[in-house]
Length: 96
Image (tube, rainbow, N blue to C red; front, side, top):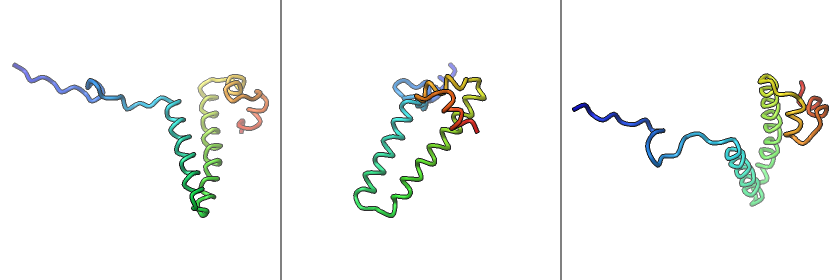
């Protein structure tokens, strides 16, 4: 009798998939940023510039996302609708 093959980890019953959906990932990022703000508020004034630098990182990440979406064929109107702005405003801000 041949041995029973060991299932791949993703096939193991009860084990969660390693994949995280984008809304869950974004919620996680928001929790981290809020927690970082609370830690700074507790008395770490030297870390305040680090918190502000996250805004720059978010802008760069948004720029990368928009570039990727445009390359994937999304229109400025589709992107703008998701961002709650006009096509023209989105193109002016991220259409570099």
